[in-house]
Image (cartoon, rainbow, N blue to C red; front, side, top):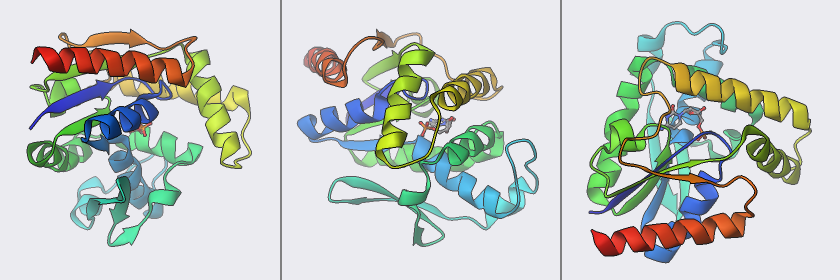
Length: 223
Ligand code: DC
């Protein structure tokens, strides 16, 4: 099986690009952020906040998270219930970032991610895919863009979904999440040494998809 890892900060366009390229290649696309988002719902339901998270082991031992693929779309199942449509709010983003810093949570989700890559050709996106989850991935890409370019993209996405958000709040959330995700002790966001670094600032999404497709097809031809 072939694995392609795409890591990078929030809003760099990882998921849109990975989805498009995976369709082209006939690989499955795995969005690992959705796993952390789904787990964070359970912590929120138990009364946790990004500042105060307690009873981690107890919550994890009563929790089942599954990924299903329906019509090529990844659906997230928490304790048997499809929560896919609930995990994209700014509040869930901040909670997921906090929960993902807990080593027991990362350990809990590791095998699910590795199993998907053992059983399928995958493009997997996240923060630590090339460094921790799939260190032997055939191709590793670190996709980034300036905080402003990423906030702009994320703001437009949320407005299109009908959410009432302000650009300045989206930008400050992005900066805060970058800080959380890259300074945590376990599996922080950072480029793998053997990753290809791509900066999408100033590109349209179409340009970024085209650039990434070209890199991946070129690299696949070499492996
Ligand atoms: O990719 P995303 O924005 O949906 O991810 C939500 C949070 O989950 C992100 O702020 C950090 C965490 N995450 C992680 O720690 N490791 C991953 N492989 C993917 C996401």
